[in-house]
Image 1 (cartoon, one colour):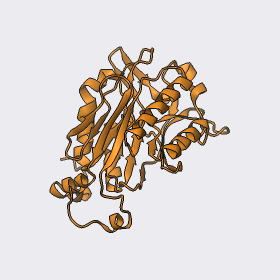
Image 2: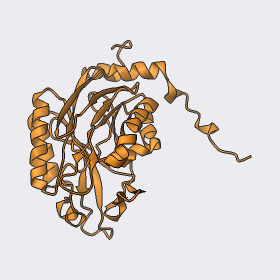
Image 3: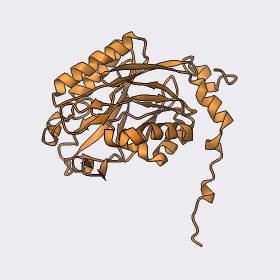
Image 4: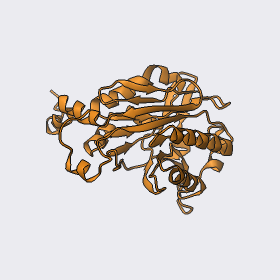
Length: 295
């Protein structure tokens, strides 16, 4: 879909404004890190062979298991896993979102908790962006879903937008999805694609997952790309799966079936401009009028 003459940035880069094929890699990770990574990398290779230019992995694709084993699976960045992701992206010539995994802090850091970190690599293997999850999953939803992510992870403190040949990309992770302020910040910074790698709980996912993803897409006139884990990996926590791509109108254009696998979607990048032109909500913001005065 064309909305008129290309922008100056699109004219400089012929890749801008065209369709791009993205892949959602859905996995069911367990406590065996090496096996998780090997299975995930095979799915990345499948996605690239099927024509994906941007391949996205879910949150915690590397490990899902007992809390006392989690730190042993964490790594510094750069480290072996980030180097392996870089090499894979370069070998396949793809943009690769490394989902998220546990990043070790500096050795002399008094706070020994890890970060929940998402990495984006370019087709030359270069690390384009690093995002540390800002909002941590500390919730009590009945007796079966009690989580305290902050006990093991520390929050990031910086929103991230990175430029790519197919437009600016905003990075988030899972529970960030419940904070529209972050997504609006990313959109106002130019993001046209919003990435949401997730390990979303089945307990909340069946009611909230699709609704929230569609809302974030509609609010910001942007594509939302949400690769997710599935199943329990043999543990007690069960992830919802249903990896999704939502277009700027809020229409689900791809949804992964249950189980591990690759789901493709071809994005019409001109759709972002078309929707934002018809519903220019980002231009209609009036922050100066939002100050509350109690009567």
